[in-house]
Length: 428
Ligand SMILES: Nc1ncnc2c1ncn2[C@@H]1O[C@H](COP(=O)(O)OP(=O)(O)OP(=O)(O)O)[C@@H](O)[C@H]1O
Ligand SMILES: [Mg+2]
Image (tube, rainbow, N blue to C red; front, side, top):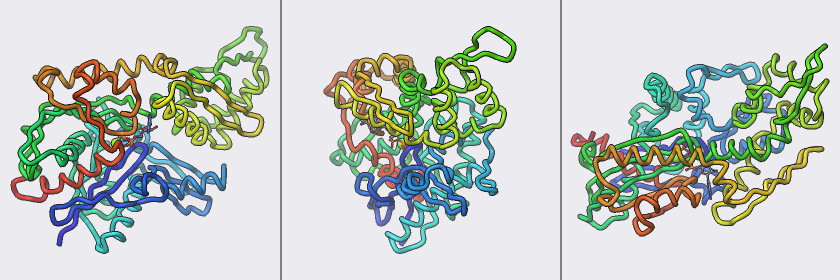
């Protein structure tokens, strides 16, 4: 009996499904999140070079604080050709080594569940890892290498929104046909497709001609968090602080690049570079906001960026169901308590919403159809919960066409359903 895994390696969350005998099962891979169906795509290395993933990584990180190294949004680094490897406690890890650790954990948990070794996998990939074709190819190649290192021998790729379409297809009656706009709004990317689906055992045949258009943009949940950090929180870390250089009387602003890096929290460790630290020390000597610069030093040294961003993310998620939220965070003498309104959140992110809207319009246009010719809009991914994301579709298609299903497991389910496309002779 052949079993094939589907793996959705996400920027924020990862999940695993197993295909066997024509059925797909989403397998619990981790502790608390949504019945264990999701594993946070995070790693924690302690000083003994023990490596933890998912909830266990978060527990260790919170328990041990600054001692180890915590990593998140690793998927974001896949197309980044200037990021080749990183050193953790004297050991060098390439990006595919890091991804392989997560894939291996998922594989182990899946194998424990099905009671077999499994060496074939359908991996999801965003439509656009990078707008630069060369970098996009590097990203897919690295992901494939990671899957090999994790022990997979047969590896296929499926576009994440196409996988979501197959999950939607599974909800249709046999023979029922629809043209669907798929929107998958995750942590790192928003991916779209216009695709024809049909209920029944349709997934087994070649689907290329059903995909009318594909597209994606690098604006999703993480970007919204960064924007909130920039506008609402960064002033606690010296965004508006000024300083003087030796022997001169003029005030200088803190280099924007430091605050910019701070706002993409997975990049905060880059601020540990010696030159940057020295500059921050110089700034601290003359600044008009010494406390903020101390907070900046602390976040770099103590590695609490993840916890701070969790507070931001929590407020963002609350704004999906209420009008107002508060970003609350304390660490020693740092006490953040920033209210944020839903309208304010939308305004701060207006440019991000516009980029998403432009990409949606482009994908509709390239499908050769008018919105009226598209029957259903199927939205998935955590970020699809944001009301103004939904509003983009209501404005174009009307509220009655919107269908929302489980935001977090549609893609992995569809990856499992993609298996026959690759493993049967008629498949693509
Ligand atoms: N209720 C909510 N409101 C707004 N955003 C939410 C909500 N719930 C989750 N999110 C956001 O959704 C994102 C995670 O969604 P998801 O698990 O679909 O992403 P992913 O698959 O890991 O990412 P990608 O597909 O881009 O690689 C995070 O940015 C999270 O903050
Ligand atoms: Mg996803």
